[in-house]
Length: 156
Image (cartoon, rainbow, N blue to C red):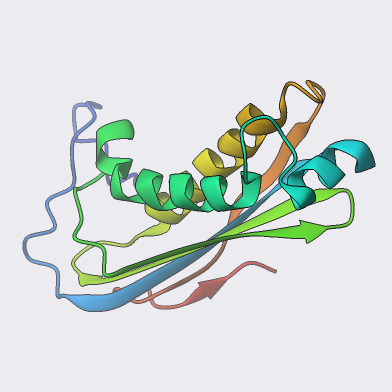
């Protein structure tokens, strides 16, 4: 069985010591989706919602969230991210969110990518909830990571 790195021998949570790890270029991509009615999607596309340009605000919120991940997730290391890209695209049935996060460092950026997507999706919900409270945030997941000792991984 794989040992969890954030749990010590006494079963207590701890931040992993990465000081002996090599610095490598690390990148992670996460995705998510906000399902909504065609009427709500039309508001998002046209920017006619009461709170403004949903896609632009969600993208900025995702970037900001990636930079704040260590403040939100207790055992995450604060990281000097070199790239955060968040996109919100129109898709069948709603808005698709993608985040790509990159750095050269001693620990991965999977949590930063997932946090960016999650907050972007929450921002979409917040900005459109006056039109539709039944929107569904779904399929938030990591789809790819590269770098580090474990190398590359891609979701199937």
